[in-house]
Image (cartoon, rainbow, N blue to C red; front, side, top):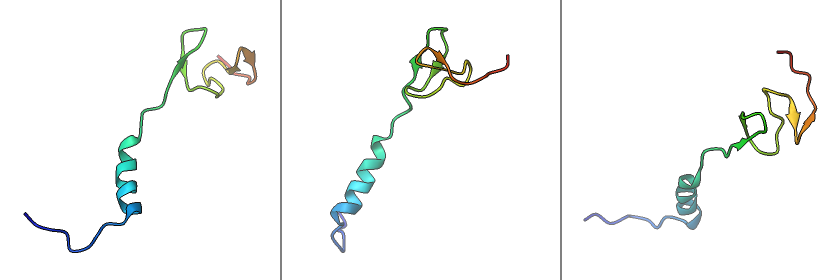
Length: 58
C-alpha cells in the first residue's frame, strides 16, 4: 500500500472532515401549516412570531 510523501496539516484534515457536517436546513411548522426556517419571516404569509411584518398580496 502506498504511503503519503508528506504529512497533511491539521487544518487540511479538519477542513475535509468539516465538510461532512453540513446538514439540510431545519424547518418549523407555522400555525397555518406552512413550513419556514426558524427566526425568519415566513415568505408566504409575511408573519414573524405571530405578528404581521410584511404586506403580502394574495
